[in-house]
Length: 268
Ligand code: ADP
Image 1 (cartoon, rainbow, N blue to C red):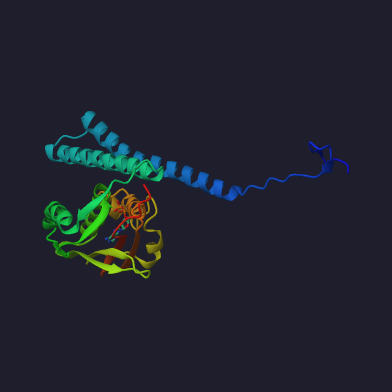
Image 2: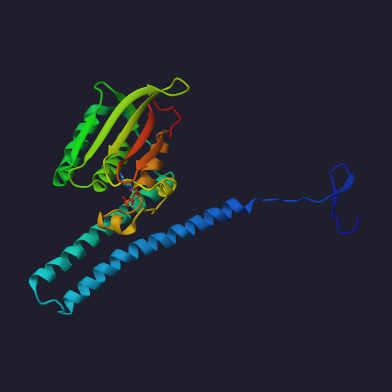
């Protein structure tokens, strides 16, 4: 056979043939695209607050502002945008740590009622400023095995969003109950509901994507980074749980987190 390589085995027998190496490059390419899209998004997100800080500082430095009130409002913008930058950087670092699996789980029993008691005190201050009623419905004596810091990050994100995206005078509620899943395993179901602005149906499937925001202007004015829900989803999955969302525009939103009561001993 012309052009077909000959192979000789140790026993002297000869045979001919070809070796085809087929590799599916679509998955690799998709990953590369996602990575470069992420870098482009990160650069864009960082550039916006930096440009604002630079612009307003420049105007102040050039003596372009003559009254104290305007100068103060410019300084406030510089301060707010620096805070946003800080939040963005820490969210990006968190996300990259979680995604590169550099964030080992530190499981321990958590008393759910005590855990939320402290958190609600902190969030209550924010809610009171907007006259939002913060309610909880948590049974006593409910324990879950979880990484407490990561659990806190999940619910601070969900509850702060609920407060941010609810108008003054609205209501935010956290309810917790235990139940058995379809396979008879014990699980804890956490529901964070609000009477806020809601999420349009078409946006719901994309809500957990990095940097995805329903309304950029609205999210920016509330100081959001667009990374919170993406981090939440990762953290829930690290606990072998699941998250879902239901929402009605103008009526409100409910995020439901289901976590197994006891984690598998898999050393994650
Ligand atoms: P952000 O930092 O912008 O809040 P998130 O990832 O936490 O980013 O949320 C993504 C988007 O989902 C938000 O920009 C907002 O449009 C929408 N969203 C999240 N939670 C709620 C909620 N409780 N009610 C209405 N919209 C919400």
